[in-house]
Image (cartoon, rainbow, N blue to C red; front, top):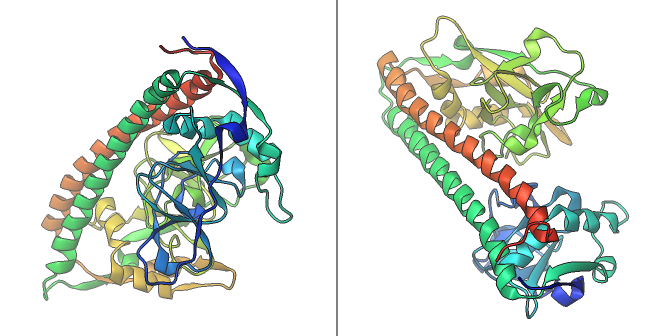
Length: 393
């Protein structure tokens, strides 16, 4: 095994500050802080350069992007493509003798993230300070082969995580395509028009006190605004735990539909989008005041699978968006979810669709459990490998 020695951070890497000014005529992929998931080492989306103005940093495939604004969010990714990114993101490239994949995990390690946060600058928002960080010292293996071996162990876990995410994305696309074909493109004239309030009941979430928030796994899991992805779907990273007072109407069970009712600004990326409460946190939890819970009325033959995808169809989205209001914070009242009009399909089609999609959801649930397990393993190994407590040949 190779020896380990101390390096100053600027001996390992330093920010690449090559800039590009988008003019709307190029086709660069754009990454902003909003496109990087908090803490997961993954992108949740990408933008296009025609949507942004002013100077941005250029990055190349395999460069490490580190969010320097609010560094404690740990927004770190290594894209496999060229593009441009926000100037609130550092672009890092390994110097001679340092493996690029090893650098990625080094910068994603919480020891480095916490150090970046401790030397923060900025007057309005916490911001990592390169002048402070460049002189911090870190112990690394001198042999690049050992660096590669460490990165290989961690990247093998991330490769499996990515594969499972891709499987889930494929299953979701299959469900969306099936819904669109059966209930949008193949609508028949004799289908009656109906409204959502004829089929669902809507419940308000818990207006909670900050003093009731607790550590992970202490109290009940509380699903909140950060538990729903922009565009819909459940976001595991947003979970909170709560041990304060609540009432039975604030409880949700796995399989329930939750819908966001609040959004900063008026871009409509989040408000009105649904998610399904997963079974990962147990059979019961809470939901906050920024969400609604939807329950099917006893007489309807519509299913949660049908309602979930119905809420994301363009025609229903338009009706929901038109019902929102607010200046700085956009809000969706309960009647905004009750009023949307849609065509009621025959029962047999809903039943068949629901059975098919339920099988997809079961497969996704199993994949998500594997993903959480692999992430926990990676997060356990990462600091031990980076500190040398666990050595590899």
